[in-house]
Length: 200
Image (spheres, rainbow, N blue to C red):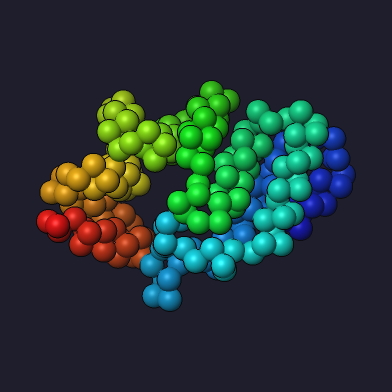
């Protein structure tokens, strides 16, 4: 971030420089809230937002305003920063503007086409338009070679299935994601998610 601030001073009229700085500032604001005391990752839904660094958020939003003033809202870094800003502005998870996030991911996929962006777009659309829409978008990624063996893909499927009330299928998806994960903390998180799949 220090180097990003220096670069922004050296290139004050480059919107992508400010977009990158905004992205770093806002993403860094959540660092201390990302994991629980046991080191297991916490979702945005379960993070304590009181622990988010408001100074970094304000700096990031200011950098994003500079991007807008320069007319660079459609740059890849600027769009990613705008996505992070949507979460930063929501005081509670329930206040998240998922429709705006879905629209931003639509734009990001156009300027930065990649399977991972497409996966994140599916998550946004599932939150904005329902889990069945998310599952449709995941199915379209089913033959993407770079996502084969990618734990977050199976984890996203598990989340959508759970939200759709398809608990047995969700459990299978979370178990698959845990098998694919090479990170101990992430694996523990995914195995915990299987517990939420017990019949209600």
